[in-house]
Image: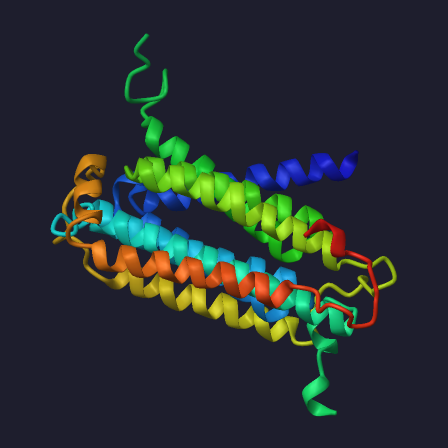
Length: 129
Length: 186
């Protein structure tokens, strides 16, 4: 119970600090705040990809990184006048490619799991034996 | 009933407040995705993260992208990931260690990347750019089927190839050694 309260308090502090940073960067009317948000999301995804042991966690981190890039594309599409609707079109293409990547990646993980009986990538050492 | 452009009794605009709430939710959920121990909860936090991201797309003014985000990511990819988790997690696997041995260098690299990127963003002068404009969905449809029709078709072929490849890769080889566990979901 106390952990829930501490977690809620930390989340509130986090959101408040983020709000101050966002308003300093220009709020929702400036391109900067969206790009900073996208770079933070990309960094979180990169950390997850490099640090997790589970193959499916790594795939989820890749999805986070793809979404960060997509966010920056949509932000540029909303702010650059010459781009118009093309930004959204490119974002939809990226989503389709991400769906294809997730399908094939999860199929590969399931195929490896069938042979090695573990989802942990640091035990996938068949090439070194 | 009109609610105005700012939160009542304050001068904070609604879209700034919503942006902060969605951005905070998204970043918190993303941090939970990469740090939580129980991988099913990671998958559920990923759904929360994508939902908040769809809200941010609405704030930018790209409603079709937000709808596609909800349909593709929350609807399809998250369910795919959850099914893959259910197929691959074993109780006897040593799940106590969440991170690899190089987690601290990875964290340093991620922080460094974020700092460098944010410095580059802040140092660049974006003043030549226009105001935020909402994307017209009719214009988007016209562009998708005129200027972008070749990439659209290629993406269709790519999706077909991905479906065929996924079925081929995940298919159980017949008569391999007769084991049955996990195969009946497919």
